[in-house]
Image 1 (cartoon, rainbow, N blue to C red):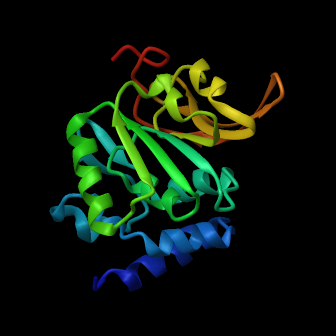
Image 2 (image 1 turned 180 degrees about the vertical axis):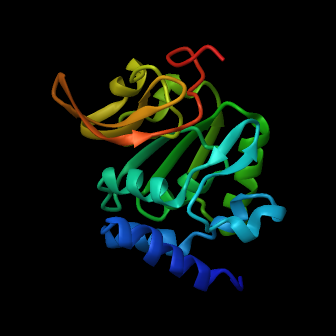
Amino acid sequence: MSDSFETVRERMVRDQLQARGVSDQRVLQAMAEVPRHLFVDDAMQACAYGDHPLPIGGDQTISQPLVVAAMTEALQLTGSEKVLEIGTGSGYQAAVLSRLCEKVYTVERINSLLAGARKIFDRLHYYNILSRLDDGTLGWQEHAPYDAIIVTAGGPEVPKPLVEQLAENGRMVIPVGDRDVQELQYVKKVGDDVEIETLESVRFVSLIGAHGWNG
């Protein structure tokens, strides 16, 4: 598949990611490889590699490239992991993860978004992504435990089912706070304990579900 956006993508990696502290070479390579413009509407493809989020329908967004890269880097993936993503959205974050781990399980509550993401996964032959339509705050128990979990929407607290579905020494990155602004939290499961570190302030769409916001 020819890719006229390759140069623009390389510039994004250099100017938006490397210049601002993203240093994991595998993450940078994945961001340079995955065609972000395919995950937005045709009318917005020219803006796909800009330093900002973009609307994708359903009152949802595709996150700013730097946020995608920083959250991915925080998971410290080496290639053999099972990763759970909560909030498929456009599918871009799952696509990036799929280049960095063994298998991605992604859960989305909006059918139209999930259907669109699945089409792009198939088009790109990203066959190590499994998806389902459900309440993401419940996780995906069938395939637990997960080495890493990433949540792409902000909730009032860390959902208990997601902590329970983390493997020993598993890592999770999740925005926690109110509906307007959240703190990106890095959660690590060590035995019966949970270690939490705050990384930075972020702003995400609301995490809707039984262990999130009501709607």
